[in-house]
Length: 195
Image (cartoon, rainbow, N blue to C red; front, side):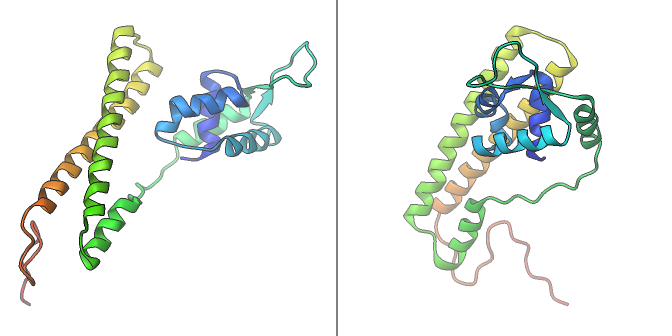
């Protein structure tokens, strides 16, 4: 996903000023695609220059007033083109996984175990937050295509957070157990095959 497409999506959902967009990123889109305020403002300028968005006309003077942007037909077409584009799944790039692998070489210390616990708590909190969003949305009971698609995105977030909580629980349990004997295969590893 790219930031310009995230911005086009947000503006099609609701025309907004740059400040409103940054707040919406902080509250919703930022859960799966983060961007700094500077990045958002920079992309707004690029999208406007490309003819994908425009500042809404206003009767009041623009000095000191926030510009609200809306998506133009070429912007909607670009977003539609991008939605249908083929893209390969991306590999997970999480520093925690790399740090854990490094611990296999230098040793697992208490600091890493504590960091795994902290991550478990953070993922548990996010999971609870997502489930609350799901409960709130179910009470609202809308059945539009947009609602259904947003529910799918939210379910994906719930499933991902549930994966992390379960994986971290297993990792912590595994690391709490006795250390394997030198030269022993790692738990779950296939035995070596002979040619």
